Image: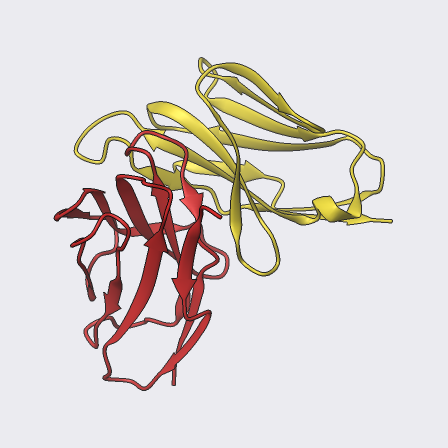
Length: 112
Length: 112
């Protein structure tokens, strides 16, 4: 079983829809990251959070430490939001402390 | 403009040849990383460096080597010992090992 699991793997939405991408993890963490990867391959960091909720524009990220679960929400989705969204966690134990463990990503396609 | 540059964007090499991928950052970050991305898999850590003249192996270091002689530069050499080198390689940097990471545009390596 992967230490970081994302769902769904693929998601197609109509422009304007509210979108939720989920991330569950099974290890102790110091922080959780949400990243966005565009078709060209470049990756942009969206959020780094260790508790509660963060908002940036139409993007909202939440984390529940007790349940080891995080969600990324996109409000009023737009075709330019089409990308792969990646969840990653920073280990908080052992010799690999601070290293990131990545999920496989959720491919989002927003249709006009 | 501050950022991370990787060169070249596309690289072709023959089996048995070593090849070096470049990564430069002007963000004054102490920590730098090399990741490998394969289709259908999450990013995996090859090597990382928390400070100049020091680096550590990641999860898949076999067949790779790095150096960190300057703060701005963290080149990755893919040696002929790497059995399956065809992949997308991403470099990243962060203020320190526990902070948000910033990614370069990536180098797509194909072994012919």
